[in-house]
Amino acid sequence: MNTEMQVNASWLPPEVSRAGGWAADNATAGVSSLEPALEAAPPLMVNPWDIVLCTSGTLIACENAIVVLIILHNPGLRAPMFLLIGSLALADLLAGLGLVVNFIFAYLLQSDSAKLVTVGLVVASFSASVCSLLAITIDRYLSLYYALTYNSERTVTFTYVMLVVLWGVSVCLGLLPVTGVNCLRDESTCSIIRPLTKNNVAVLSVSFLLLFGMMLQLYVQICKIVMRHAHQIALQHHFLATSHYVTTRKGVSTLAIILGTFAACWMPLTLYSLIADYSYPSIYTYATLVPATYNSIINPVIYAFRNQEIQKALWLICCGCVPASVSQRARSPSDV
Image (tube, rainbow, N blue to C red; front, side, top):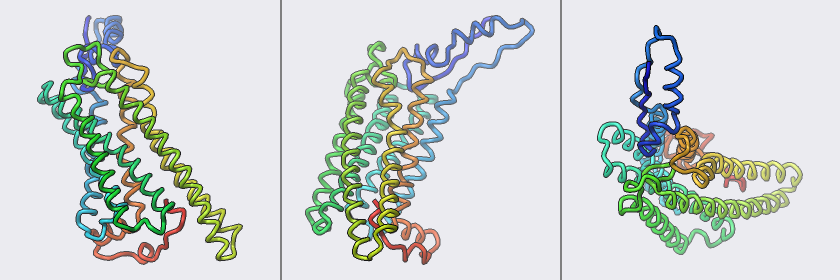
């Protein structure tokens, strides 16, 4: 008995999707050794990993659409901080839609042109998401370091400049596959994600490591400023020992959660893409790609729904009122 398991791995070159990650040859050999009385398993037409990515994309799109609608619906959320949070939510929203559209096109349309467009959309969206995280980090640092002059027209102008630059760079990165920087003509140049070339993915990975290094440095400086502010507030209120310790611990914990989550989601894919190519098993690609998408699920929780003003707007939209526990909560130096 000789059977072959066919799996459409939409993110990989055709020959890899047939043999790499799902070990079709091994599966064939294993089935051949069974008793003739056993029937072969039905062919697997849809890659379960693609279903996971599509499900993640749907959740990402729905969750971030709520944030975008809240910011658009509330005219009071027009400060630089909310513009950057809106940029992050919009980028993650487009990334989620890109994952869903890629799944649909991979199994229904199956066109190289559609593949280039959808992968380009995913690359541009995730690039804008990561760049928006860096922009939010820069904005938080400036709001603490230049606390007296932060709420000025200069800050608003600088925010718009950051948004234009980050979206311009992200769109350019997303257009690279469409404009010819792809591996459709030469499968040997494919990276772990088709149709991106190995050089293209290497540039994206190195850029991510540089951005992560910048975020790490900025958050270290933010942590120092938060500790200094907490110390000054504690001295003014004459309860240094308890308040300073609690506030500092909360600030450090918040920063650790932000950086730890970001690194845990993106670092596996980044490091793997630097050492692997199209010939590596596809299961490793999916195992590192799926956690990267989870960052876009977590972002609204960390950056949007923890914000007091967005919480108020969400309560007003959903219930028409704001609970006293939300409206009366004071902001502390640890709320970074």
